Length: 163
Image 1 (cartoon, helix red, strand yellow):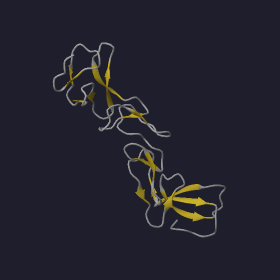
Image 2: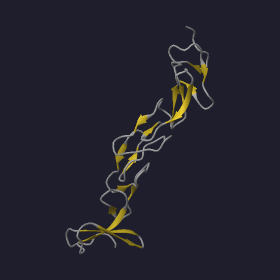
Image 3: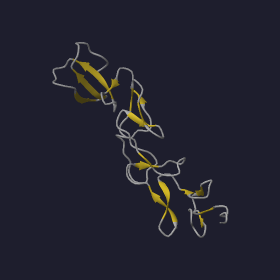
Image 4: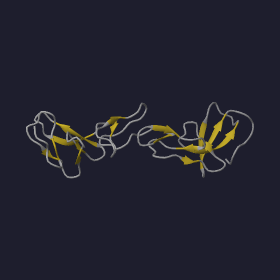
């Protein structure tokens, strides 16, 4: 066996080395090329390698050598460098994390936003809203006003925030 030249790779058992394509670089051990985010190196049956898109519900960022599964309750499209987290959570680069208290995020957010003064997070953490307590309602309802959402919740007879 001979060592592959710089910028070339080969899988175990190959008869020759293959140059890594433009935009990729060899992994330290020379067994594979590191592909751009959202793609991974794959050897076919003829031992020819190429970068292929990560499948749906998998991702690969620039630090990863291969695609990884998205965490439970998150998704991704093909060729994705991150997963799409549910509302009230954000993608931290490797997992979905719940927003801190008084912060919200819509589905797919990469960070959480603090709720403005006088508002609170909606139950699912997707948006901030003005809370009005004890309105005649069967359950939590949402009504659009000129300044965002007004949330009605059955509870005490105190009015919180603006509405």
